[in-house]
Length: 220
Image (tube, rainbow, N blue to C red; front, side, top):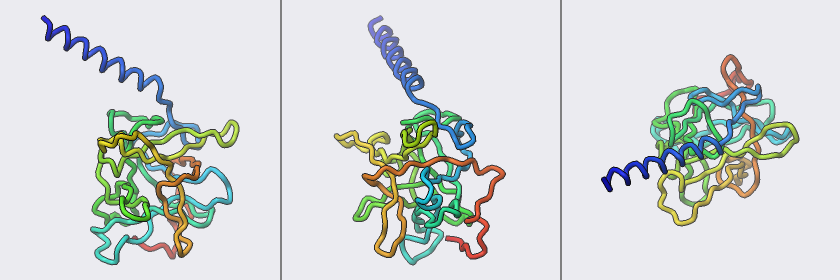
């Protein structure tokens, strides 16, 4: 009887905690006012005009095989270029909608389809940047999206890197903003940053940006 009572108590605690998460977490919207859905490709664009274009894939982190080595997530330097689409997948719950503060994986929609893994991860050595080559539900590939109020009556969001939400075992439960970091050659790397980088999400279904249709664009 005691074991059954404890089981029921634990079940109530788990269900209550999950319901609390569903109540607190808000829905994320794209620029058309629609809910952000799992598996739908979206362009990630900066909220502020004049701050560059969308996020995209750049060359390999090494000069070896492009099929195996990860690609670097960067920002297009010019606003006219919208980058490439990305998909979002919840890690904890099997949901069709993407919610704020939920741990998610982010995956690049590589137009060449040659990468071993297109899931984002944060490099853990030296100059921390976001690359592909990650794995679902691991600390280095654990992200979330939170809403930020930058412009009145205009929804914008901040992507954050949250390794502790995917079992990193860290004592400090910190999330880190993901923004743009300038390289020595002027490259716009994406990585953990103290600066706020507000973004919006544009549904890519039926849309094509200038960067995807550029004749000089090469597979990476």
